Amino acid sequence: MGGIDKIKTRWSLAVMKKDKWVKPYKRIAYMLTILLSFFLYQWPEHTASKFWFSHEDRILREKLHIDVISVDSARSELFSWTDRVGNQEVNGETVETPIQLKLAPAYDGGNIRAEAANNANIVTSIGPNEIIVFLDETSIDNNGVRWFKVKTSQGHVGWISSNIVQQI
Image (cartoon, rainbow, N blue to C red; front, side):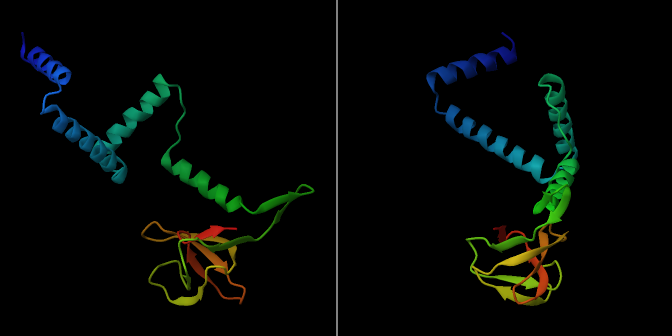
């Protein structure tokens, strides 16, 4: 028997007998799988991630016959879709209806800022039941946070993080 055959035989016997050393190796295999997934999706620019994604894309297209769009295409589709939310068609014309937002249930208050950044000056604050109107303008800061330009019922205009609001 060759070296690989010995390992295969030893492993299959260990699995059948449920040896003590099999359980720790299974745990290590699970942890490595989770860490590999985290690594690939956390750093998509890395060479290993690009290699993985190219093979994943090839398998999806060739073996499973599934068309895959790029991440950039998906993002642009999502953003164009969210920009169209709130528009209605009446007699063949697009009529904009204001999109109303309020704080997500997890938040007791939120700050509306002068610019789309966490360190920008606070224009005003809103409470949990206060309704604000989306002004059809978005921005993404350096941290990847999406900001909405909004107007309060008192007429204050500023930016609020999309992470803390929800559409009514």
